[in-house]
Image (tube, rainbow, N blue to C red; front, top):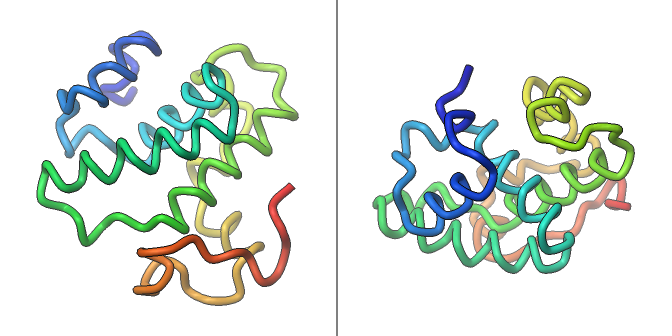
Amino acid sequence: MEKHFDLSDSEFEMHFIDHRIDPFDFTHEAHLRFAWINIEKYGVEQAERNIAFQLKRYVTLVGAEDKFNITLTLAGIKAVNHFKEKSKSDNFKDFIIEFPALKHNFRGLIAAHYGFDIYNSEKAKKEFLKPDLLPFD
């Protein structure tokens, strides 16, 4: 079990905002949980604004600015929202079990939308690039 599950949703959100999450513990699954929490509390549009701002601050603080990718960040939030709308789960732990592709095949999910490599695109890191294959809902 990942370390972020030691915290409640509110604690996890506050620890991230206050930069108390160790970068080693801010895994892909933790990113997904942060998106899930923000969508649940604020709706998808506000979640996109919150997370883009907070994640950019976080990576700057921990010296990982080169890892920030706004296209990937927003695409991930849209993917979580897509599955959240179909979900029967009322908590993240059940949600990620219900939709394991988010954790185990995230690249494949994103590749269904983008016909180019958003992971290594300098442009995708700096500005949101709309999908060229399949639009987000």
